[in-house]
Length: 561
Image 1 (cartoon, one colour):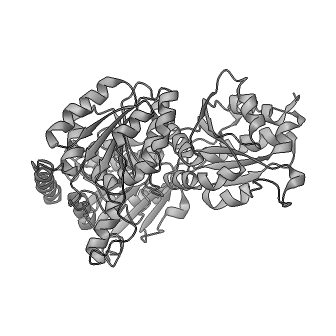
Image 2 (cartoon, rainbow, N blue to C red):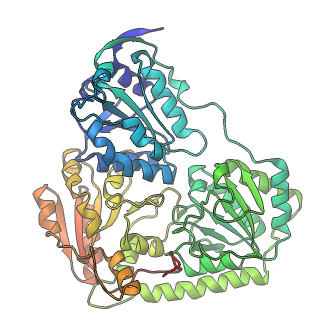
Image 3 (cartoon, one colour):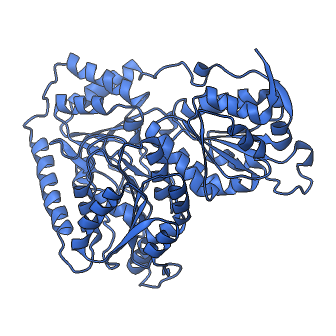
């Protein structure tokens, strides 16, 4: 049944029907009508962010933890270029992020109107769908479609542009039913013939390995991954985005691959004769030997997105389907072949165990450094030791991400988060805020470089205003040090655009009403962390780290390096 209401009210009523819990936005003249209608909602919490960019990161963090589009962005025209980083990140990381953006009156478009922005066109390269509504009666339909697309197949961001006059005017609209925002297609199984080929290849391998990406976590397929590995006794590696899909404590775990991953994980995957990848994209940073193709490597590539199959490496067998269902099919197949413990006690499994033990000894030596300066390896190990397994860790971009991926052991799915698909500085702190809003009972920590914190420290004000108790650990070395170290390594220490001057981050935090501590010695790390945990409030740890420690390059990212 249709109802008459303003376009702004139609937006909010549709979001309520979709189950939206949180709206994060920034006010401007083209989204006033939507913002005003949100005041009448009893089910949607509204939060003002300090910039559209960091607001888009908060929405990302919330929806990562919920694994559903439960938070939306409400922005206006000139904020659109700011959210592109957030859109690109969620597109790369497969996070469902709906955005609703106000634009100028339809009759004022292309006539020099204040803040006229081609919103839908601007966002198209960075979103699964980006559309402009030109008929007010179709506002609910456009939002409904955006939600459906954001969760169908490989998840991702969507954008709906609503001109100001359509938001202000009244229309006869039909608000969709609550159950109509998600496609009722269920999960997609793999082609049975391809699955059987994969089963045959796997059980006839001599050196098989499994490599799980973030898609395993998104598809809730961690139990199936563990079941398959244990049934056949196959080593398991994960990607940086897949950390937690398989506990690094498990005897079959060889850790995470990548440019800054575990050396043993990279060695196992490189030495395998059959590698099964699940929800893993082979992005250049995610696999250390990106520029070395193995002639004798047989790849079984499983992904929900057919465009990913064989995109970076040629696949011997490609299976398009949901990770949970496809792994289940493979488990049924190997059981039908009576292949239980097929690789138990083999020289290959012994080789994997030896590589892991050698690597863990090497890593422990790096983390036990007792230098008077704070070694970042030790810093991350101290954070791991001081946090529970179910704490949520968000790592930013740059050296802090490298050490986080390299050192921070992860044992539970959806607890370690990085902006792996795009890598925008300043992401981890606002994303961690969004995560804390989504999971208020969890401890949430952001580690971020001093350069990255310059992009996001203004959200300390939001953390105080909205009572979001996130711990921020700033890796302070006075440089954009990942790039400075590249300049050391590749450009004979000719420094350009890499040295920064920092404020006193503790005093800066205090100016927002946030407590903080300077951490200058290794023995101060754990007490400072425990004080931050006990505060139950936003807290900043300004940690002075040794700027001479090179980031942990397991492999090479670019050919020149």
